[in-house]
Length: 87
Image (cartoon, rainbow, N blue to C red; front, side):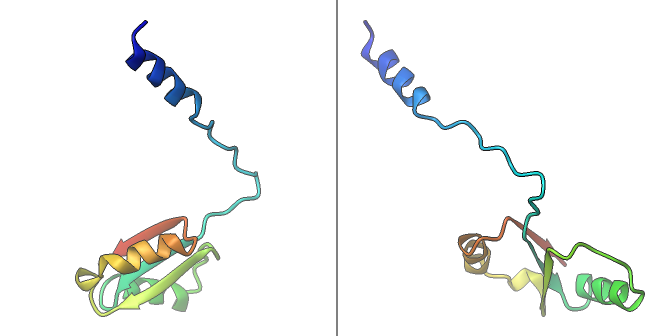
């Protein structure tokens, strides 16, 4: 018997099946927005009282080109489900 095949079978047996998401689950989304572009659009939507999802949090940055990767990683470590960077 080939030992590498037996090891592969053990590895695939230990893989968990994906968990089902509850029907009332909503993802937490974090948006990094450039002050002069995307944040201006989000601000205009607020002035016009256009509705958007309550689970989206917008953070204004001077420029998204200067967004450091550590903030992206830290957001996921703290439980953010999705990240949107708009410039």
